[in-house]
Image (cartoon, rainbow, N blue to C red; front, side, top):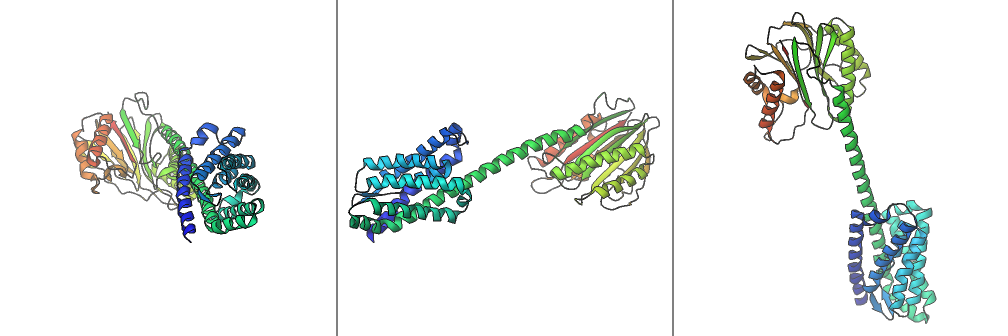
Length: 448
């Protein structure tokens, strides 16, 4: 009984070191960096040598018993066979077995044969029955079978038989159980590392795709500069900051005809790629409807029905749309559940008062009310999404409407670009380093 406890404690200690080394080598991909992942001859040879080194360490740390060396040597050939195939398993078995032969003893020859045969069999199993290695208990059973085979080879080769039987009788339980648990644990570690690496690659792929999607999304937004819209009657500036790589907010500025220009700002429910796709669809449909249908309320009625029919994901979008007559300064506008714009007039800032209609894409045949405002010289309209007023601190205090009005009042005489920058600076200073969960989009135009 004392020998059994000694065998267990020594073998488990050696196994722990081997598992630690294998986990480190797998997680850092040391072997893959030098030999790649393709099972060419270089991969097979190096894997076999690597398994052989595990076997040698098992020999060195083994326990001597009546001319036999009790160890976890077989884990190396089994691992090499599972990973590199039959040839790799045999190479590992020969390396570990040859080292064991130099140590002498009654089981030296039997150990060369046993480790080589085990490496070969494990390689055959991995080649023809790879699914056997995907579950822990199946690998454990294979390990039990291989170690039982090892002991059978000892009984066949070692003479005299009574001596061989006495050795096998004393070591069978710790020898089979520790080696079987060891190879099953090692394969479990390898499968876990492979899954983590696959997840890491998938995350990198998704990150790259989201970066591309972000570029594409921003390319859908109009580039506002001195050349566009390029009319002296109006100055326009806009910005969008997505909470994630891509978002559901958008703005648009486009000519309805030679003397009328449309301004849109919208906020799609949800976040990420689904919201971005719905945003792109909403923007295109709205632009087409506003250009094709003279009456703005009718245009949103038609756009709502089109979006509703395509809305398989049960999303919705809030919209503020306005059409400005560049000759007269008359602004016609409709709100579909969106935040009221801020009118900046003669240094005063006030939210525009009008009845907001229902959001787009949620219900069919919704009618929208059209309002009108006569702009006077130097009037400005600040459009925004709720990411501005609902920007929050770590204590969950909101930026709010009052701060927005005060901020715009401070820069009422500035140009439109400076207004946006001032609001952005004010919001950032308020929230500090607190992560925001909503997109922040702003559009400002001034009637000159």
